[in-house]
Image (cartoon, rainbow over all chains, first blue to last red; front, side):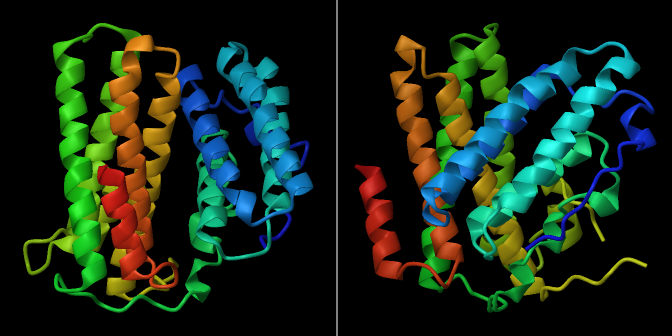
Length: 220
Length: 81
């Protein structure tokens, strides 16, 4: 389980400049975190699940306060609250190496980055317990699992394109259309990343650094 | 000094693909929830649900430890219906 990380109350990064949190991205991150926390259901007891979901529910209004504060002095308290909630959430996670837990840790790390938590204090994805899993073996296109992933990926790409065209043709000015365009474009990019990562083979496929960059990961 | 990656290149590719598939699943679910109140969004939601399921199929396919190829194939076929 991740080591407990305290945020010192005199942490200057709380007041030094305003974290760049806008309402839309805060809402999207909270929603994404909520989705991942709900997926933990199979791994934790019901009472723990209630606690985890309550912590996520508490984050919404706190992040909204961060997004709405114009004065850097006003923003310090909600930032501190949000960091504390994230820390409690991290400490409440089950001690396993499930994919669901990794996803929650990823979301926590994204939010901590948004809130200006210094790098070493973040629940960095790379710190998670995934390395304990046996390394995957190199696969070829003939592998039935890769064939399945490839078929599913192709459909995801087609469907996201279809929805993008639908958005462009129908309600291009609506607010939901703007959100949909952003989300669907990202889905298309992610689908492309999957193709380049495990389906495409030979010299034509993208190198690891490029794929990590496209995913938004820090390239080592 | 930066630590070297703890994964082999092949495993790193699987990790990146897994992360991408997870994000697809989360984004499709998010967008589906955003259109929940739109009475004309039923077709949208249906396609987004399908994208979510396909992302789950990808996640299972990329993880040797879960599900057999047969059960993943069954879920893939099911999501086509």
